Image 1: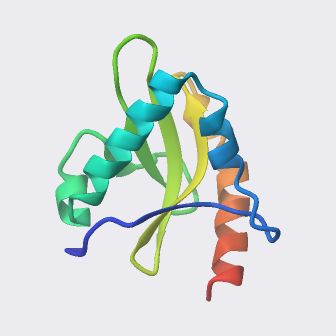
Image 2: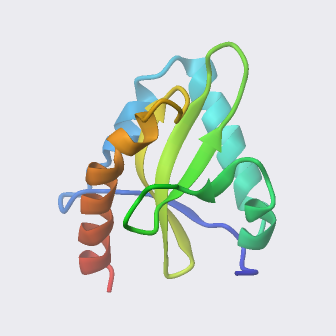
Amino acid sequence: MDFRVEIEYWEDVDGISPIVQFIRERPLEHQVRIKKRNDHFRNLTFQQLRNTPFFELATGAKHPLWELKYLASKGMNYRALCIIHKNILVVLVVFKGSGSGGRLQKYFPQAIQRAEEWKQRHP
């Protein structure tokens, strides 16, 4: 996977993205931080991204989900569950906080459902 990272947010059949809505509801400082982090990710290849502490295979998922970490100080830590589909990193779910203590696994069912829908709509 030596192609550049392209990021898309999951959308429903009507083109509405709960990820975009979630980000817009965050404080402006957090929105800017997420945007800057995405801009940084887009400057990397997938191989380079995999060698950072910000991207790893989500453990415990029965579906190949990737965890994208928006790490920062001042309570601005966010996590995303993603899939790689057709050389695109598709963000399925975003939440605030760490993925520890089972928090990440809590979002697996929703992420898997969205991943399957995405693949059906983008064959």
